[in-house]
Image 1 (cartoon, rainbow, N blue to C red):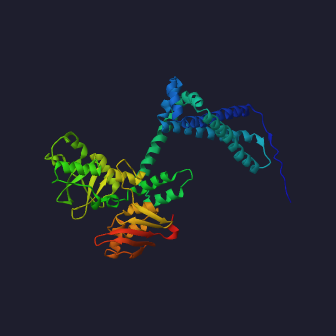
Image 2 (tube, helix red, strand yellow):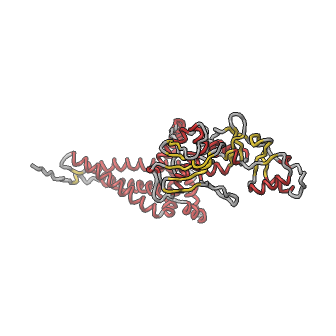
Length: 438
């Protein structure tokens, strides 16, 4: 059986105190609208609106800009006012409802909860925020003076300073504790947050930033066998010819073998001496080289390059011999991708036979190989040992130089030697698993 209880709401009294309560309620709702609207107006001002206020040069505009220089204090005073006012609205509304007769306490409770919430949201939150957001400059100028006074009138000013200081203490404690996030977590987050409007290049830059701190110098260096270097015993004419042929602005200088780098020649240092004869002592112009170990992290190296104002470092192995060369450009390419200039003609040489078959030169760096076939490369990195090229990778795994048509399958990827000699593997066919084929 369904019982329906009539609300039976009727005023019990019409005392003057009830009229005062209505007036107080109206005033408090106006203050609530003021606080909400002010917050939306101030914090929705963008760079363009702020620039317009600067050009206006009125007292109200200047005051708005001055308030925005202290965002924590501004937000604190508006939140304090809003909370005090809303508490007052609840108390006054409860007193007004006491003057009405309800059929039960449950009905009265529901009216208080939903009625007061609806009134505060509509009049004190939604309407003023919508208006102030659409008219941010006008509203912020209108409320600037009252807000300025509130920030200087006790006890509101005291509460504001206490709230700001308390938030600073909490921030300091939060910073000390910190949050430990691994690079794998960041990579997963980037993969999960891939959006359609984000281009592939932008996504690769994000991935490059994440992997940047874990990359070692030996992974991206130019191997010793591919370095264009100057012999200190060469005369000036031979040195100039070597420089013109290479097209580099900085070149290492070695003594006896490329293993023994003694300095770096900046080509700009030669410009005042181009008219000199063959016997010119160009070795007096070489600068001191900067040596780094193979396991140097490139994020640390980048900071050192910036601090020392250098662009090149010689990578040395555990015995002190030069194993390669790394430049500032090599480091930046790990984030932004390939950087090419008018002298770059050494693109990665490979042939794409079909969707999952490629042919590479044996000297191709593993890092470049990952980029071409578009794989993560983590599995290969875990088993690659000290090798940095595809050819070296296969030699290390086989324990010898593989002959033509010999093959290895590593982590599901099949490597077939197409061409080799007694010293190195020249060409390699790579067959990817179909699930990894592009």
